[in-house]
Amino acid sequence: MGGAVRGCAQVAVFLFLVLAATSFGATGEPASTDPDEPFSPMLLWAVFVLVTAVVCIVAAVIITAAVAVLLALGIVSSATLIGVFRGHLSSGLRAFHYQLFAALAIPGGVGATWCWARFHGPAWSGREILVIGSAAGLGSGLLLAFAVDCLARMAHRRFFAPTPEP
Image 1: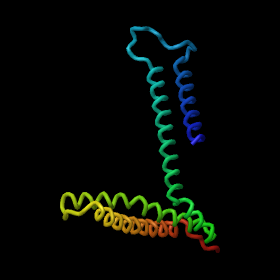
Image 2 (image 1 turned 120 degrees about the vertical axis):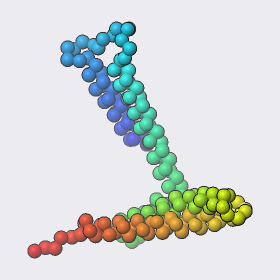
Image 3 (image 1 turned 180 degrees about the vertical axis):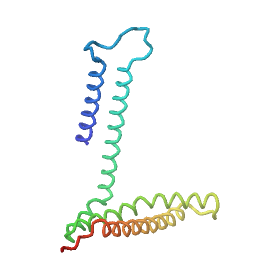
Image 4 (image 1 turned 45 degrees about the horizontal axis):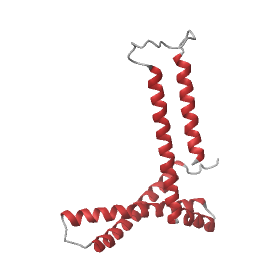
């Protein structure tokens, strides 16, 4: 996370310096500081730089949390092991892709099953909703991962096919 925050801080400092340089104008004198003037471009740029810095920091925290969750679930490490044992990077990426889709689809399946049971279906208990929704989410996540994998292989064959030598 340190690198991302440092990068965001560098961008914020750069934007602040650009603002400071443009506020002096072509004459080299500071911009008007008349108290009757209702708008200050410096204030606008300062707000822009602060908002940009906050957005970058929040994005870095979210990315760090997502990586921590993937590591805690073992998705990254198991996909890495598959890639190492098979000797191909693509095998590890494919395993990561399938595991990620399955892990992300399970909560969606539980939520969809709960909504269906709540509004249209029978009166199921929480355990039944959890089991049926998990199975439905897992199945739909793997099916979606398979479809995306087929599309990716098809695109790879089409756009990155080796050219025949003359």
